[in-house]
Image (cartoon, rainbow, N blue to C red; front, side, top):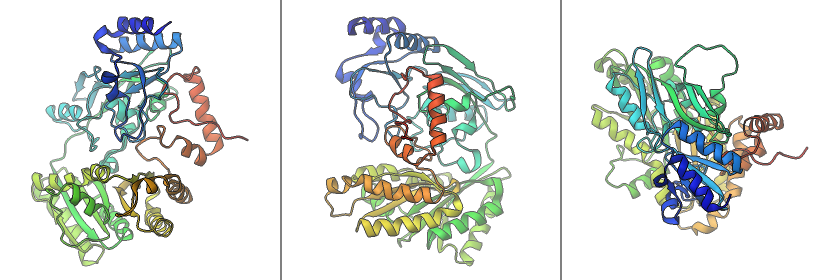
Length: 476
């Protein structure tokens, strides 16, 4: 099948208007959000239904054409970007955008893969429910992408990852068959839990087209506080204390290192940082209370006062209104963008056991300062689940290209330390193509073989998002 025949066949699947082929039209789909990876697509197709997705995959399977599924294109690891061959089809889920059903009595919502995360939050709110997944990119990222990468976000501590919030999936297999697993059940012990294979697989096993997601009663009140701390060890102590005192009411516990603050202030000067003195670590805490506003404030205030008296923390503020709490979260949510504007930084999305976070941070900072003098360790993230975005920024006056040329050295140092502390080199951003080869270095050979076996069983032709997640098998 030549190119014109292929495009005509795709047009029959989804409609001519929804097959993009010119470089101008395909460019936004051919570059990742960080502008680190750029490819070239044979075409970008936008199905409007599961049946249309199936038709596209049947055609691609018959013609041996690789398919890269893409949602909001907000990924951080190049997992939804086509390669440079010009032979791959990008399947955009942007037209799979219906909220199919809300079942308030069952606390579930059924949505298509292209629905934007924020739209799910709003739909849940309209029936008096909460969908707790929350990300900085929630205005543009999609549910399909959230599930494909097993997104975490700020409320993992209370509600879990995307994996924990999905009860059922609808998936189109690489050969175009449709698996309807849209069951809103919390207990289903009838064999393999197939949905868990697809969640976190980054589009390498099939195309998620819809999902049944869990909803929750909204809290009566939320409170947000920000505290200054002498060290990351103090942050771990504070987390332990707050969890013991508040239990499941603790929704989020974030940390921000000192090096993040000048970068944030430089690129977003209108955002007011609440403390005059720069301190080593800041903690951002959110609680969800099911009693009342007064109970929420008094409970959080008591815990924080005790932390100040015991010198675990040195200063703090509590958001006294929704606007004040929102302002504190806005600071946290703009850290990634500020660092992107700063340029010349090497990102890491790592996780280690909470008990080892302080030891990891101390070791990484010391070794990086020794090996890369002047480098700025602008780390932040979700201490409550052990996930840090341990980003290393170039020295202020350094040649940015020379610094970034040493990325492999920086990665090796950080990831070796992650391995030594029983951690993971990707906590929530996925492997994509950014960390694919790194993962092969650190994963157990048996684990890699099992993953390859799953890929071979479900996608034997290797057509689904090739070159992502799985690298070449190690010899021996």
